[in-house]
Length: 230
View 1 (tube, helix red, strand yellow):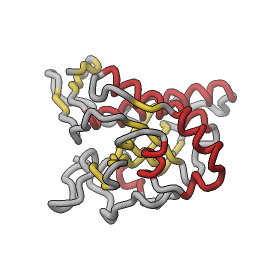
View 2 (cartoon, one colour; view 1 turned 90 degrees about the horizontal axis):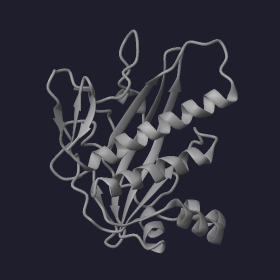
View 3 (cartoon, rainbow, N blue to C red; view 1 turned 135 degrees about the vertical axis):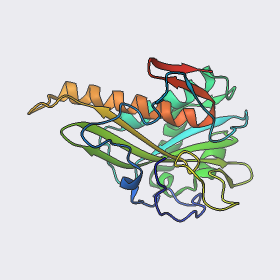
View 4 (cartoon, rainbow, N blue to C red; view 1 turned 60 degrees about the horizontal axis):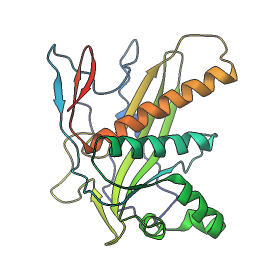
């Protein structure tokens, strides 16, 4: 079981800039190579992975923030938000989501003030009752793999409280319970990667990251032969 990073469990719903954590401590890269995705089953029989949080069926918006501008292409952030929302709808976790287009319209309306708006206020302004906030913490690229680490929170936009991760009862026992998601993707060892290939790799990593974010909120199974969802 990966060790939790040493971070403070402070409530972070009143800032858009976020706080950079030492997220490298939650990377799941294996010495001598990379795991394709973090939650690989070791047994022959499928392993049941419980949801880290029981998400209520309420109008939901996914906000993806990249405060350190680790991703230059903002379309990648849009892709993560759309994929998380679509996956939650497909798995029938929620019945209604608000897409990134409404967030873009709000940003156009308020301009620079958008980045200073509290997350709960952003959600409530676009008509959401709860916000899934995905904060990009680190991206590491080496000769073997690409790794994206993000921190996920769920905010009640009506009551202005954090629903996930839980603050009461001490520190969580796993990185998933603490809202950390780390995804590693193998990449071929090439001297130089052209722009088209690099863009495809970034999008693939974004899709895999979005899948792991949405999986925090429903139970699924993994097996050596591939993923099978409950």
